[in-house]
Length: 336
Image 1 (spheres, rainbow, N blue to C red):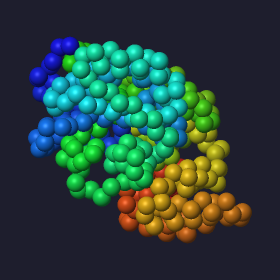
Image 2: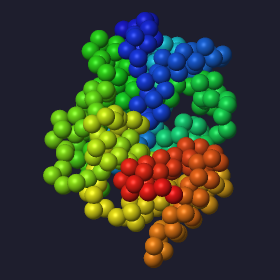
Image 3: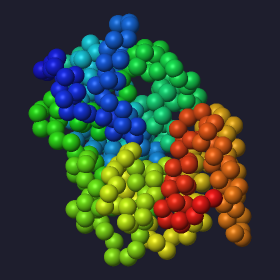
Image 4: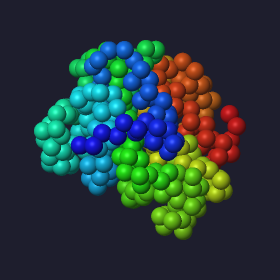
């Protein structure tokens, strides 16, 4: 096993950012963990993907598991640790465990300890501190920050937590073949329509064109996540670029507000961890409102969304404003 002691500088030069959705600079996160006190440190690879529509992580696990392990080992060597956890969406582990077990066995012989944690697929599992609680056997709810995982992570020890695409990119940086590309997953009519690897700086229109995914009908898209992502109309695709976790969901222009709001609100209501009142009660009320017959009560919906945005404990609650407000503005052209 070759140890690249210069990996942090190479990651900086590549301007690598996390691919779990937040886009935090990878080198900065790693340096914070390295500088934190104590001898025992952890590396966690997160393949949670509990949000609707996302499926790039499964694609990477099936096609490039060796690159993910290589990236994790580079992180472990950088920190001087032998301890790592691989957090899997349980469905993903069932589909990839034969390959994964082979790599765990291989690295065990080299002195690296990879522990597998199988997570019940959930949106909150993508939140770093909720994931830490889950692995520790505690209630799957986010922690108060600060302190951050970089200094007080798994079992109170400094911890690097990155998405598996980030570790894949670290391995490519190490091999000298990294290009500023990212994985894009497509969804249409609730069905997975493939994963593509294209430049990060392409417009959404370029990505869709190259993937041959521009529909013959009028449409709008939701990008970055298919519940929390921003909604864009056709004319915006030629200037906007990808954000978040890399998904592009295509909706026919004939999709009704009730159809799309029901999908989002049901997801948020089911995924709320219940820790804070604004999110727990807000998601429930939104779902109840949209289930009622008659005209959609937009004023009431927006009052709840605004409260959730301002007062929710974590990203699950305050992210709900992104899809709702962008849909109103860009597709319905409404002001409420």
